[in-house]
Image (cartoon, rainbow, N blue to C red; front, side):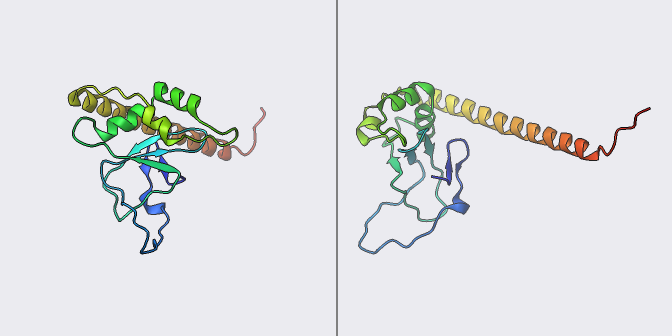
Length: 160
């Protein structure tokens, strides 16, 4: 779970690598899969680009695999991450300390499916908002570094 972020996707370079037993048949992740976190304070979904190597998911995620051309995986992930779906998931979560989402809960989640053109426009808008957020965070970090350098440069106050 530490390798996946709803805003940045999967940090492929940091995922653990293991050898699965030969008898264990697991279907690898593919481009277009949506992984959904099932545990924790905040549940989220991430649409996958092509994994750079053969990859399987940890049990902390459900793999949602949209079939056909009806829904864009990125749109599905975006919709799951929005307030209406998140409120539903919070209401339906089980557990008192570590929340858990059961399979039936995600299966009952109501998803609105607009036209593919509208889905594409919403995903483009969400991508632009995410880029803007990253740029603003970078500007804030840069300003803080400037302030730290300014403060470090102050040696003494000259009282005249």
